[in-house]
Image (cartoon, rainbow, N blue to C red; front, side):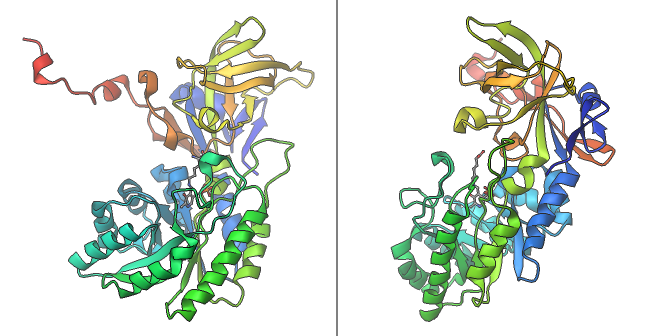
Length: 424
Ligand code: LLP
């Protein structure tokens, strides 16, 4: 459920009119809804009521400081994968003891910063990473709290590019190596073993892969405890999918996911950590764009809009399907027809939708691409020298620009001319 609805004939984010926002900030822009973020966070967190849990919002899905702070105020921790995300989480007021650090390639400098901050847990993904963390922690005279991320070799049944729990993926420590690596960790002076971690992929729309992976993790907890290790924390990662298309079967609801986990974790006596990203931010954001031209091709109609693949790369990268609606509410008797919605970038892959059924639209009209709050702005770039676009956060009838549109001066001003090319 989200808070983007038609009111008085135009799309609103909560009580704020999208055309009014477009007039103020220009298009294209991302618009996030506080009520939707809040609802999604609470639905997820409440599903685990009564259990000892920490919900660490996966900052990579939407790292705007205002979004992180909104969730932090609700009690969320943060799942981070870089020093940049660590800084963002801390700046947004997330206490270090609610931060977990994932990722296969943490540098020593990044480890140092996270140890200095005093984060809750490092999710370590390989033997060399464990050795590096031990070395950095020893040099600082501290112990790093570590969970090893174990690769359960489970097929998440999602797009290959966002599947992470198969043996062929670069993530985690191979299942059969886990006990040996825990043995090494136990001997390392700079390491304190605190738990186990798993994350099998993203946009998972079926409970079965979760069940398969979490059952394996539960068995591993028992085995590791039998080996004498202290396993307090079980981090089950993120990955719960969201509905992108109306009419498709909805993914499992958080309470169903929680039910499964309650069953598997009952009797284990562990502190459960979750790293949801998309589930919280996905449907809490839209991308608003204006049509520049409507162009008749040989066999199809192209709607050329002012947003492009550099602003929202998901369709180009994962063949992702985003619902597209007109900002002005279509008349009840409007005749829908098929069109390709494309951006101005010079690549055929710059296509948001093909043969999409849309109401009558003309140049100057605005459209909204839905479910763009996760992995939208964070994956944007400046290809074709297109500045990064604005981000707006709405809360009831209030709104604020939480990232201004980059200017061409900012963008081009990043380049430096070598002295041999300077004039004069
Ligand atoms: N934890 C770890 C270790 C992760 O790698 C991820 C996502 C998450 C948590 C959050 O997963 P979520 O709950 O959002 O599914 N750019 C892609 C998605 C990449 C996901 C990367 N890892 C997309 O646009 O679909």
